[in-house]
Figure 1 (cartoon, rainbow, N blue to C red):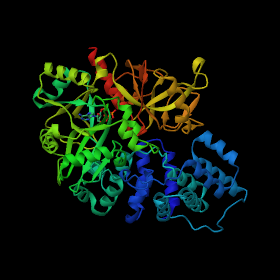
Figure 2 (cartoon, helix red, strand yellow):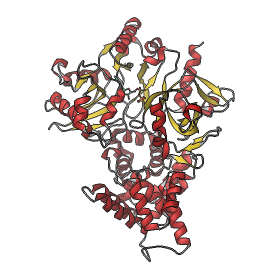
Figure 3 (cartoon, helix red, strand yellow):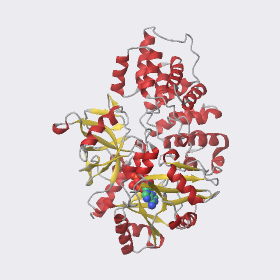
Figure 4 (cartoon, rainbow, N blue to C red):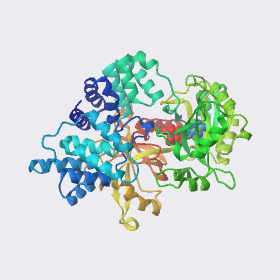
Length: 600
Ligand code: ATP
């Protein structure tokens, strides 16, 4: 199948603003894809070379891709670099250089190039990914050139973006789920498709099984050791009274909520452990100490368990701030040194499989009992693993006391869980409710917002960014709707770190996925996610966030929601959340309505 088909479809998707229309474009592509190629087309459309948990990357650095572009397309280095700074996108750079070169009858290394095929492209990309050792960057540059010399300008645009893992179609995984359901089942069967994705985390497998065996085939998919399950997510409430009333004392389990990195651990009977982050990335190599502790705990039993990985002060055994765990991440970390300086503990809170028995539809009360049995005596546990403290069926007074204890023990609050609840993979629901320290104050809660613009600093901040324009994500359209300007909470260190962090997201015009009526000095491609806390949510004529939802819920027209007195908490959430996982406008509207209720 020709790669050009893919490139033309991506171009149409990129020009399409709405989720429904994007899905419709994709349906056409999926239906004309031969069965054997479906997984590949789906992964490439996700901007990946395989399922997220496989963690396959070409390993081609952007500066090396620029070399490959210049060598294959010609053109001036200075012009290319200038365009790169302006657009932040090497896809646009190569497209423009190739178009210019070919218009002038310029450099084209292959006289009658064979059309690129999707199979061929994938093979080359995978070859890059498996190249190791000295000289591997040169091999990658050469392989990239082989592709680019055969590509049309449009094909080259998407090839380059795939090469560096930034396809930027603005297409959420859930839109691919929509398209798969329409292409190979019915709209009504979409939930079955989503469920299959939630338990396999692999849209390539889902596409392949659905097209060959239909929804019945999807029904036969099960969770598998070594393949992560999409995490269950929590709703939030702002008072313990509301929580006790919502779940009912008799069905309530309260549990310490730690602030760290969520990890899903797959332990095999032979002791091998695989760890996955909340974004389903493989992180096993970063936590050999946790793997060893789990292995010791499991004593040859297979299991899938989930927990929060928290840093521990080696002298006192007390919890440290979550940011400390991030020191384990990144490529250039000296792991042995990091392990010695910042020991971590995986505090377990759920069990998704016991041996070969999967427990997703088992009520929490039984999953917890299984987890406790698998963990065994907590006194005998190695320091790298632990178990959350719980309180079952508390009265309101007991719940309040438990919450206070959680804070004094270094947790950030509690999770309230319904003892009857199943593990609803990939879904945010009321079976888990978070209640955090911040709710006690006047503040609403922390939210995770996407940076979509920036303002030049003045006075003391001259030369830096003075404020950022922040947006929440609309869950229906995948668009980013602004909700505040953020100028507080930045230390000098953070201010200095922002230009390099945001630099390659700078775009000349507002990104088409951003909804905003505010001008800004610098437009940024939605990519980075920052944690923000504010005093309250108010209606705003200038910010569009949630306007459609508010009006659909009967509110008078009056714009969307704005966060008053927003402050950066200091936490960049890029490791855990991509822009599509940021706080949604639906969540904001929900928080706003609850705030109104609280005020009577
Ligand atoms: P979300 O995961 O809901 O999108 P988030 O990543 O911003 O949000 P929080 O809103 O603070 O995190 O709370 C949910 C997270 O809390 C879980 O994803 C998990 O990482 C963490 N967590 C800590 N302790 C527990 C616990 N006992 N049970 C479940 N999750 C817990």
